[in-house]
Image (cartoon, rainbow, N blue to C red):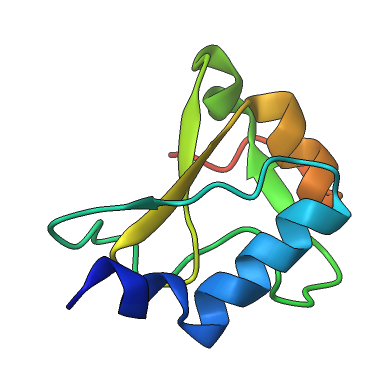
Length: 93
């Protein structure tokens, strides 16, 4: 699938709009192969309660799904908490 078709996908545009509303760069990367992320993007879903795994804080850079299996965006743990309104939780087994 051409990158232009991926980037104009309505789900990708929804994620970019949510990032812009949060004051974050709305830059998405297009992957040659699927991220395998199952389209689990953290913004633009309209979810009222979000829990964020505390273990993610150990990573300086996170990549999240951006509305399509071939798109991701970069953010930090504090940014993830901020854009999702998420609460820290220990969820991993």
